[in-house]
Image (tube, rainbow, N blue to C red):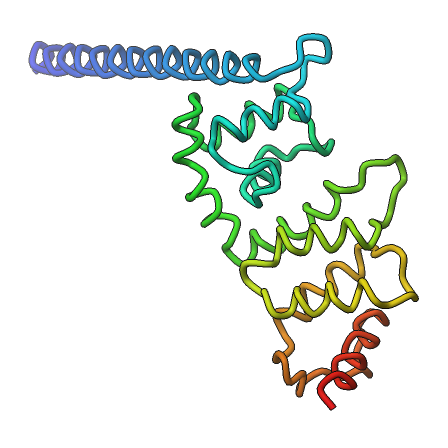
Length: 231
């Protein structure tokens, strides 16, 4: 019985050793592949980065856009910044670049180009889009302690971020923003309120808009302008 038990134990240890070696080999191969991928991601970064600042600056982003065959105002570039969680408008740091491209599994321009449609699908999911919409506003706060964005920039941002999904609402709101004189800037509360407005209020009838609810005043004024326009 003892010999049999020893043989079984020996077989068990041998099998464990083989399994352990296979797992170690897999981990080693996986680690090497990950290191190589990171090297390619870094090399791609430095092909666009400014040598003195060590960041991809607006000029580098334009070169990247050219290689991706997209305009620098394309919403997918803003989505890419969201994926990287970029903090400064018009600049990508190495850490941000790594974060975004590793998540997208893109270590070449061609792979990044192919990843953009999937990135857009990801952003368009409702929960992600709320986060992206909020991020788009924060990304445009370029000065320290800045809390609001001028009307002209807001109109451009609305076009980029909301234009494809809420074309009619965006066109009329932009028209209103350009002719009104009460507001020179828009803050985050007003920006987020407009997102809620587009998702909750029937348009162009506005039948379910209730000014007694907690809407930003600028939207009350916009709706009043709309009603006057319709009548």
